[in-house]
Length: 395
Image 1: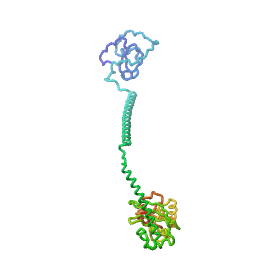
Image 2: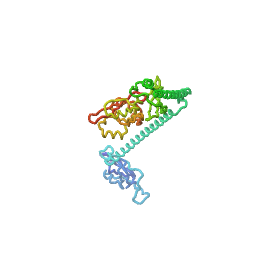
Image 3: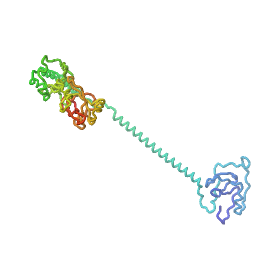
Image 4: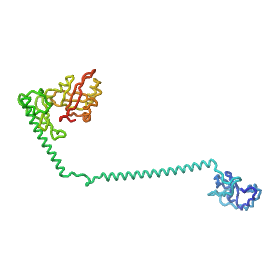
């Protein structure tokens, strides 16, 4: 609308003038669009062009000069086709306003939501791009690492160590040497055992006993007053750890049969007199049946106590729960003593030695010190007090 006090120019012919009902902007349009509705170019609210704009000029105190309205073309009478795009042109702002009015609350909320949605879409697109890039880098890294690992693990003929022919020959020669030494040790052990069995007294037998393994009162000589047994069944021979000497085991066909260990020493083959005396005199059985104080060294077979046996013992002897339980059996069938359970004190040296092989549930030979202990309320029990270092032991 023109400023106050000014006289507007007369409009050109065939032009309609009107005001937007939303933002009060002055608009103009060709007379051919009279009665047509289209959005306002300022606020976007639909506005219908008037059929006659004489009221606009009457408000100004003027009379417009108008050319005759051109005849309508196309369509039924009184019905105007909608334009394909906004056709209203802004003439001026409403009185007292220098700029277009702010959008309405509904329009502002819609635009804000659309802008926020567009921004979220852009952020999501950026995150997807970053994720795709990281995933691609990870995949590329895995391919590179896999290729490197494959390249380094591929067997290469020139990189694998090849045993020289002379080394293979040395190994074979060493094995053959050990076999010869084993055969010689078995033959020497058989000769020493025969000489021991034929000895007439302890003085004649002493050179064939392992030093410290026999007391004079352990045997009565000759061992066999009648004919000396010469049928020695060879059981096994194993190399003593850390040496080239062997320990040979024989069984004598006697009643009862006797199992004899013969150890190869730097001075020659010697019989384990202690083991022989224990089985011939039944010392392990007598010790277990004594139910009293004292201790002794025995050649035994031992293993971790089977769970059913341990459970049965602990039901009647709850005082033994703090101990580790070990099953021992005679090392020689001539002992005539049944197996039993003995105790290992937690934290003792014997318990530490046994723990090294506790995972092995099979019987294994050892030389041990057994000792009677007495509980002040529940009674006596046998404790494995120590493992004795000996070629017969495997701890």
